[in-house]
Length: 432
Image 1 (tube, rainbow, N blue to C red):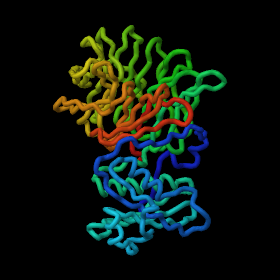
Image 2 (cartoon, one colour):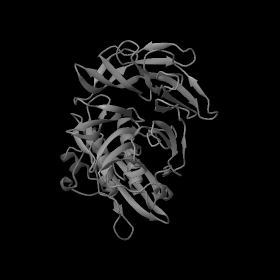
Image 3 (tube, rainbow, N blue to C red):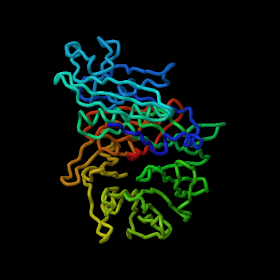
Image 4 (cartoon, rainbow, N blue to C red):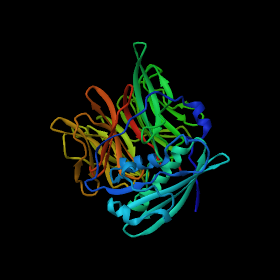
């Protein structure tokens, strides 16, 4: 069945008018994969047009699957043949290589872009699992490849793929002897990194809107922290807060109509909710402790947040309808920056135990904690929309880099920048 590739914002040629391509590409370095990855071969795709394609579509699909940690793509130099259709697949040859699946494909030119037809073949079952099509514009070959990888990943694992998603992060560089800060946008594999906006003052806490059309962030460009929202297609932006003291930690509600944040305009850091339609601020916490870093539960009925009201930073849950606050974390002497998996079952956080900062998860129902990372300065976790992985900021020596880890801790890769320090990643929602 034909599937029209509709990629909001990022794939429209007009969007590039508002975001300069930056020389700050991120490079994927896989540091840990599954102990038993599934062998798969993505045969080089047949191109029926003239000239050479600007992107290696089959190579991008292979890289996506490898980065998931669940697959071990067969190198092209080890392939015994390069089938273009399922009928050309010789099952015996692929069984010799131990390959479980083979992907074949054909790319055709269209008036305004490309059409990819691709097939997934089960070698041991000796059957074709599917034939699908994805089309896109002249600038969308990478998007076509990521979408195909999503389809292949879901067909084999049963988990929706997230290769077509993106990330936003902060890049810090030195320009003319002065620090410069850029809010960056890139494919989730680090490719096509480009600036959203550049600042001469720190910018932090970027957060996608639920529909992927806007981003909220904190900027110090006015001389004090202020929260902005920005349209990623047009570049139009709005300053949401201008209060004295703290204006921090913006977090969109699941329906996109409200934003939780931290304000100290009344003398103490408290959680507020801003109605983005009426502009009304509602104070949600009233406590002498520091309440900060709010994040919404997927059902929109409660917030999780960090507070030291128990003596040390721990994570609490606030039920919006009643105002009831319940403590969620007890293990470790520091738990902060809460994020929640899309199914609402897993709490992700920055966790400290015996002086070491790591990323950890907790089963909200049982309270069982799992430490996912081994480094000592891990922060700013952001969960993928399929709940399979999360991205976070860490250090390599003195340099800030991004890294990703699966929620079962079995898969890990890093994304160092070729230039500058990177931090504060935010994983996008799905764009459909």
